[in-house]
Image 1 (tube, helix red, strand yellow):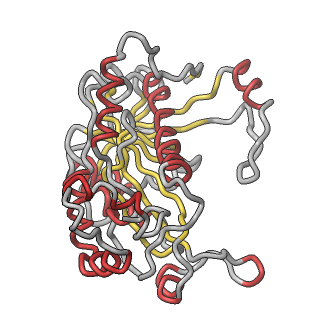
Image 2: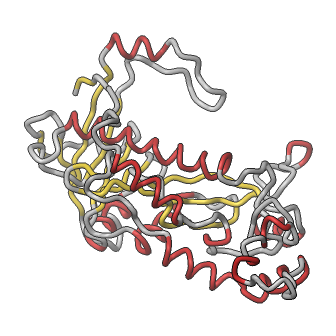
Length: 331
């Protein structure tokens, strides 16, 4: 429905001829499709998204489970929508004046399954809304028991961790800022330590903090790579910090958690697939009205093709190497 092709393009309605083989039956015109699409509205698309976009990995799917938990990841991005007055008024632009974006921008927060790149939830909001405000919506709506949710340091907080553990019976693994959760209550056998957090209005939650540095030779090689325009130059001696709700170092050793966190980058690849490859066009999203919270209208939901790719990867098990990143770290 939101293909770059026009509604009246014969490729879009060619499949209808298989259903209506009688040549005397006329195929719908572009005007008819536009009219029916407007009648449909967003509730139907939202319901379709929630029904179809579910975790797809099975136990045989490589890279989909760790520590007996299904790996999920949360991350956000900015996307562009059609340049209409309604969209500009609702979604806004991050910049103004000579440097303003040519299109209004929408803040998108995704929950994706790491092993299959299946997006199972999406929250859309005006571009100036912070990802931290959108995260609780995704957690309460779509995170299930038995999931391990990977998050960046800009999203993690005491309320988020408490919600995951106490309300969703799920676990978390996230990157941590340098000044967060530094007061160790108990040092564990692998060098990590426990901290109890006290979020306002929510139950206390105990978390485990892991601090490590990359092995010097490996870190020096990484420092030789050029930095992007939006990141600081890599410091080989930087102290890296993670926080997790997996408290037992026997069940989840620190080095395995360090390796596991790098799986979070799979959602970056997933977002790139959605924005740059699956859309097949550099044009903005084609909605011309200001809508909110209708992820089914944003991307085509995972369907039979995506399922076929997942099944094929299971059948190829044994021919492909493991997806574990090769990281050398010192706790």
